[in-house]
Length: 300
Image (cartoon, rainbow, N blue to C red):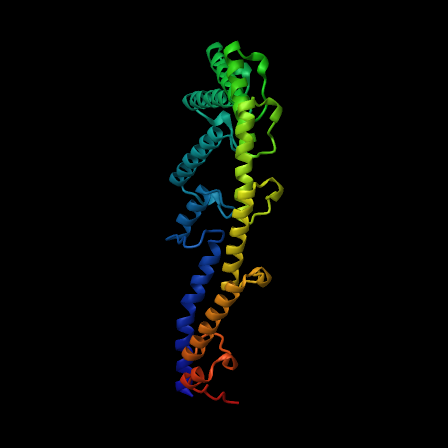
């Protein structure tokens, strides 16, 4: 009896530190995994510096109050500069307010020059306004040449308007040559129209040779049609050799059928001989059967 009682006392002694540690962990809730603080005071300071809900500012020492105030001030400065709430400008020093105003002004200048983010033109200096207008003009010229975004051609000089027309014409030539849907054949010169027609025929012949869906056989020449038929036969023969479902045996010639049959007989013999792959022993010749070992009996 005394021995059993002694064992129970030892177990209780081992369990108590674990429960005490768990209780201490609960007092430090809302902490990130792996964060262990040496004491309750330091844990409370850490929580207050990170604005956690478990922070108790009444328990901070005078030196800790100063540390938290410094952290709060730095966070407010960062929020104001990044445009993140909460931001209290009244808590900034004169130097910090000046730095914030400089950064905010520069951000607005960049927004006006880039034309992406909202921009307040009224806050620009005359020199900055001229720079933003020049940047917008270049951006509009690029959009007009590339055929993207909005295009206002009314503000172009004569030379710029000529450049835009040349760029648009060249883009239309490329679209017609590449077979794009945006092609306008009426804008092509006779020479460009001939080149575009040749390119389209070449694209169509290539599509037909590759067996792609975008193929118009009625536009093939006699030579191209023969080449496409030869490519179709070769592709079908390859599919049949690989045993693919796309194989059409009706399109095979007698020679191709004989060649495939010979290759299949050899494959079947090797599969039976090596015991690997599909084997049909009924297709073996008597001589081949003699070389094939008997299949092992399958246990039931």
